[in-house]
Image 1: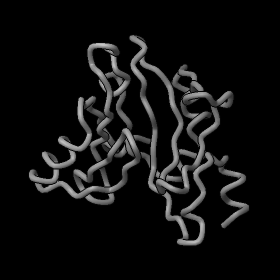
Image 2: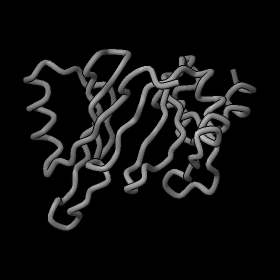
Image 3: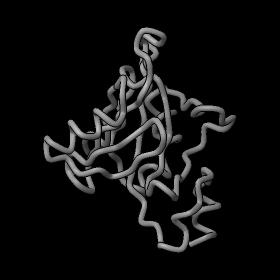
Length: 150
C-alpha cells in the first residue's frame, strides 16, 4: 500500500521569511495560502509543508506530529478496508465528521487520516489529476462526488 513519503511538515514563525529561505535552497513553491506553503522536494512526488504560527503558544504544533505516506489512487479508495484489516481506524480530518477518504481538487490530492499509538497524525495521500476547469473547487469531495464530476 505505502509507496513512499508524500509530505512532511514544519512550523515556522514567519512564512514570508521561510518562503525566501526555502526558495534559496532551490525548492520550487507548489502551493500556498495565508498561513501555509508547500514546496516540492521531488516534483510530483513529495513536498514540505510550512505552517506559520507562534511556537510558544502551540508547543505541540500539529505539523510536528504529522506525516503523510504516498499511496496510489486505487489503494486510497480501498484504504478503509486496508486499515480495518490491520486493526486501525480512520479518523475525521479537521472539522469533518466523516472518516471517508476525500479529494481536494484545488490542491490536486486526496487523503484519509489515522493515528499511530502515540496519537501522531498519519495520512495516506495520493496525487489527483485535476482538469483545469475544476481546480477552483475548494470544498473536500468524496470519491463518489469526484468521479461523478470527472
